[in-house]
Image 1 (cartoon, rainbow, N blue to C red):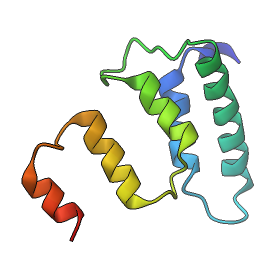
Image 2 (tube, one colour; image 1 turned 180 degrees about the vertical axis):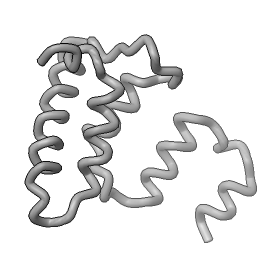
Image 3 (cartoon, one colour; image 1 turned 60 degrees about the vertical axis):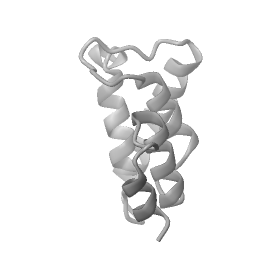
Length: 99
């Protein structure tokens, strides 16, 4: 596997990109399986570290991506985003979410 066993960020990006595929795209289906297995292995060994990432909670972000598929509810995605990155105190965000 070469350098790819250290590239957690790259595999995370590949996993997220592969979730937006059309039926019959076998290459993206294979990429999704491979990247999901890679990320699950890193998560099980608690090795989701990348020296180039600046996110506050990258292991939590990877775990969220693996647990909640992209096609999940938009409101659920928004709520998790606000809990993770702040903003739940802003009344204007709450008003626009629940129109």
